[in-house]
Amino acid sequence: MKALKVDHIGIAVKNLEETLAFYQEVLGLELAGTETVEEQKVKVAFLPVGDTEVELLESTTDDGPIAKFIEKNGEGIQHIAFKVENIEEAIEYMQSKGMKMIDEKPRYGAGGAKIAFVHPKSSHRVLVELSERTK
Ligand code: ZN
Image (tube, rainbow, N blue to C red; front, side, top):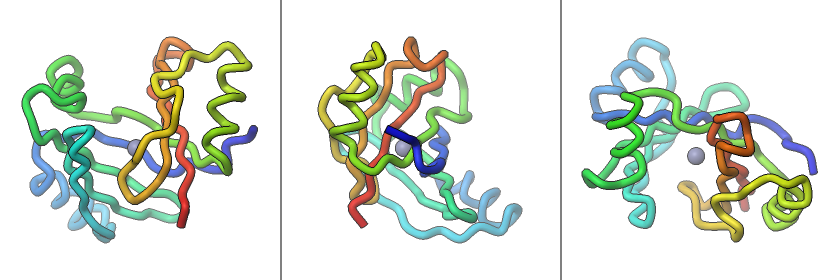
């Protein structure tokens, strides 16, 4: 297995609208779209930049993973996603290397990707997402 590129950088924010102003008006990025992922209790905004994307994540509830992250750490970078060619193979490979996976099976990710998170204990305290894009 080989990570192909940084697919996106996931950033936890308190308020999507307010944060978008910085990325759009100050950094000059364009909003490609937004999506609510019920299962993960987040509203997501995508802003492509070069070959990668900024993914802004706002919690839709007080008890979602992003709300908990902000409670503990404040706003900021929450995860880094690497593009892989085949998510099932990538999960198997990671496990064969002794990595602990949060997701042992791929789950639905925003933008129609198939994703799996690696446990930060295995990845030097960075929450790593593996992402296979179908499109
Ligand atoms: Zn992500």
